[in-house]
Length: 237
Image (cartoon, rainbow, N blue to C red; front, side, top):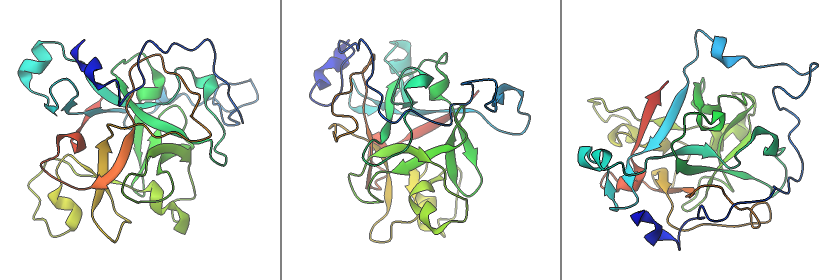
């Protein structure tokens, strides 16, 4: 595939792990035992299950086109860091796990998210885990999954995001002008949005990780309507 030209930016699919070294295993795994609450989300009648797809084509470095889809260019979607639920960690210290862009695979539960009240975006299979920005809403900070705080807690600032639908807004609010962007509403210095990252940050919690697919991180960046790496589409499933 042509997009392996980006090997400086991604973790390649040749890095198959024998096993993951999971420090601080999760305590909120929904189906770990008979005594643990089972979240049977497939029976939910009011929630929406979405896949969040990047409209950026890593092969062409441009927005996806209909022709790209006919050529079967790979679509990348937001995805939890690990392949299996049992590798999810407890949120702790510098052991944050990223929400990555990985190839679309609808059989993976960890590619499904749900829009929660108070502008939070929640893992569908882990209702207690939300989108968060590592180290605060700053340029180049990475998108991670973290423990959901109480909705009105002041500390939820980095867990709130506006997804701007492709409507004809009057742009009376700053975020309304960034169609198909994820806007970070609590950055005051500059307008920040999600952006596919072409570099890969490491820290204690992920420096030894290997991935079974190609993977890109997502970062906070200055909002730019002309930047295709900031364009995302919601797929309701």
